[in-house]
Image (cartoon, rainbow, N blue to C red; front, side, top):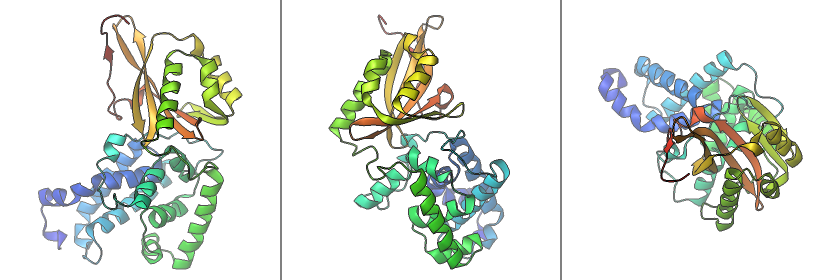
Length: 320
């Protein structure tokens, strides 16, 4: 295909089917939904401007991935020259499952492919990736998530195959350091009855601000973060003390909407506002579950409700 002879409308039609997967790829690289949107816009702009360089030796999809990866590396160099440290990723943002559902269905019938797609979009994986230097990060995602051959990654990064393999080894070691110990357990199958019941109990206790019940649901080494304002807190007692100090147990008028984010169960909380006669967005709790307990709670504020497709308000219906 000679893209140099393609008009803008036709070019847009050709690249549009790849937009969502380019966005997810950029999100893994950057950890931020909004930065990923910027990267995709830059990718498509670069692709249009450089369309005459597409020689057809690789697929259009692979060509776009090359441009997207370089756009992410450039953005990282500009906005975040240093990778995350100490377990904190204050720029972390959630990714809505409704948009993940738009991804191409290739390999969807293969259990290993489904597991890989699910595990590598969960917050624990995205957070761990942010602790890697940008080029090893790119090597890891291209090799282990997208399955690119080492020679193709080397060509993209302008390195030798040996250099790429060395970077990949360092990246995998870094991931083992920052991923949770129960790497293969994650949130369980989508039809896991026990997990659904655990989420229901956590939701009910959260609406009731029942700290004692919540305590029974949290693992003793539970991890909590609230990007971009709250760094990492580890341990049940420390987490509950943090929530108590913020006045959570005294809150009233909460209402919850179950949802899912990054292929994880989540709870969107709304707070009753008398002046509005409605419940308005408050926070989103994204949960990681393991062994029948909550092992991680990542809370995002109300600014993320719109991107997650959550209602802007819940109007009064009868008695509260």
